Every structure is written in structure tokens, then in C-alpha cells.
Length: 298
Image 1 (cartoon, rainbow, N blue to C red):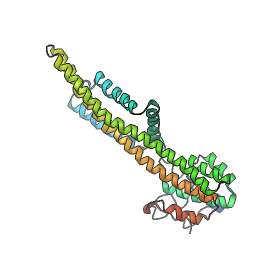
Image 2: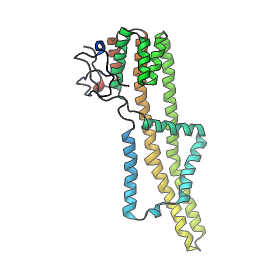
Image 3: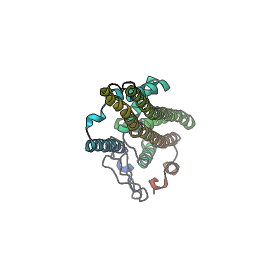
Image 4: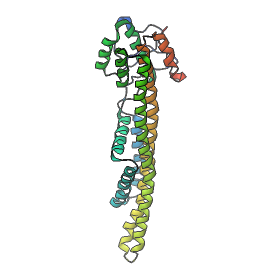
């Protein structure tokens, strides 16, 4: 996806090998940025994968060093916590919302991590080429190359001759719809994080009632106490190592996605109005944090 320029010392980003070659007339001059991390550099969010794996590995190591795995496995406790959390969360929303939240979370982990500085260089080169070659041919080329769908949507509207104001209104509605979907997914995860410890407490009470109701039979005390303790254990793990961290990650990804889409929206509207790409560079740099601002034109 990346169409890359040359490196700005302030941005501190190196050129990636996956950049598509540009025609000679479109190649950046000496003062342009060279942005190295492709916006499709990684296929998975390694921080999330490593964090989840690390947390469960440490818990597993503590269990292995301190006792038997069998003591920490209890099917009735799992039913109460896992099944109860899913059921109560579904009461708060519905099956479609819960399923959509799962899809959004998996997509946020598996989708490429995009760099906003790369996106700025990309759209500046697109704007420059549009002034030389026209938008229709370039749109076909970008579609074949797998460019971001939101950017392609904006370029398609620009190619259709839609006024810039109308284009911005339509794209901003689409962008707000994405934010709302992500917010709903985060709400589902936050609700699950609240419910899991509560289901653990309910399981603890169930186990204690079973134990106290069968004190005359010593063989029932152990299983009942296991349910009482392990439900709390399972609820705490699910809430604090899975649901709450994933909700926070999804909220962070929503912020990143909004920034990228804001860049694509501004660029598409500028291209549709046939503005000077130098003006677009100034506009896009206002969207970036100072450390990631780029210098594309001399």
C-alpha cells in the first residue's frame, strides 16, 4: 500500500522495501521524506499477542512451580464464569452485538499496523501524480495495488466530480460509523470485564453453599471448595488479562484509525478540489504530532 518518499530527519523513519516504484517524473527530490515503515509492515499486532501470551505464561509457570495443574481445572467453575459471563453480556446487548465485537477485536489484532507519516507521504504522491496523469487511471492502479478502502472511496468520489464539501460530508459520516462500531465493541468488552468477576463471586457463593450443606459428607467438601475458589480465579483472569486489556486496545486502535481516515478524508477532498499538493502537505502536517511531521516538497 505504501507509496513512499524520502526521509525527513525529524520523522526519523526509514524507507521500506515494499514501496511501489514511481515513474521518473514522480520520484521524490533530494529534500523529500523517506518513510520506512510500510503501513502494511506487520500482519499482526505483536504487542497484543506477546502481552496475552506473556500473561498466561507467567500464570501457568506459577501454577506449575507451586502444584498440580489438575487442581486448577474445574469444569463446573468454568461453566459458571465463562458461560455466565457470555450470557449476562448478551442480556446487556444482543447476539449480533457480541458477535460483531468479537469480529472487531480479531480484526484489530490481525490487521496491519499503519503509520500516519507513511499515509501522508502516500497521499502527497497521489496528489502530485493526479495533477500530472489524471485521477481515473491512477485510481485503477491504486485499486489493483490494494490501497486502503477508505482512501479509494474518497478518490472514487473525487473522480466522479463530487464537490469537496459534499465529499467531506459523506466520508465523515462513514468515518463516524466506524468509530461508533468500535465504541460498541469496546462497550461489550468493558461489560464482560465487569461481569466476569461478579460471576466468579456467584460461583464462590455456590461452592460455599454446597460445602456447608454437605458437611456430614467429607467427600463433598473438596469439590465444593474448589468451585468456590476457582470461580473467583477464573473471573479475575478473564476480566484483567483478556477483556479489559482488549477493550483498551480497541479504543486505542479507534483513535489511530480515526487519524488515518482524517488524513485520507482531507487528501481526497483536496484532490477533488484540484488544490496544490504543497497546500495539502501543510494541512496534513497539522494532523500529525510534531515528531511525525514530514517534509515532502522542497
